[in-house]
Image (cartoon, rainbow, N blue to C red; front, side, top):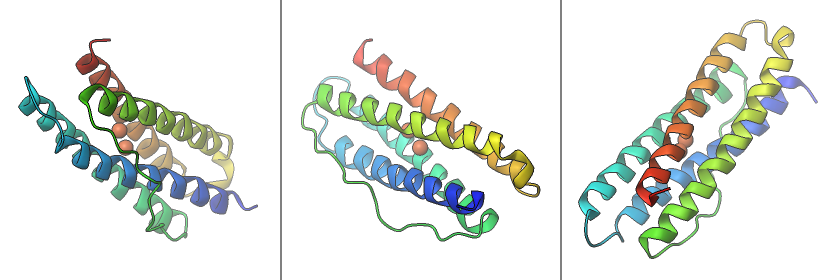
Length: 146
Ligand SMILES: [Fe+2]
Ligand SMILES: [Fe+2]
């Protein structure tokens, strides 16, 4: 398969994960109650805003740089009731996202020659998204007390 087409498919899976993450954070935020709820809700909404930025970046890479079509479907979301479940589900999914994005990142690095007019942008954007997700892992871990 053509490398650009391959990256489009991988980035479309990344985009599905971003849609899920944003919707899930916003939805989960509404069921948080109790002590410190306000602070945690605010933080989850800020993370959701980061995911929105990631969606934009991925859509631009797919459409603007790789000649593909961004998906409009999301990965199925997971329900979670209690705060500890909410944190655990999202932490697990953040790590899954990082694993996938690093795979895409390595694929781009390996294909540097074939991405003559796209490589730097793809490399830059992916690296920054990965850095944000690593920050999310750290923040969720902090709230969990880990
Ligand atoms: Fe994200
Ligand atoms: Fe994230």
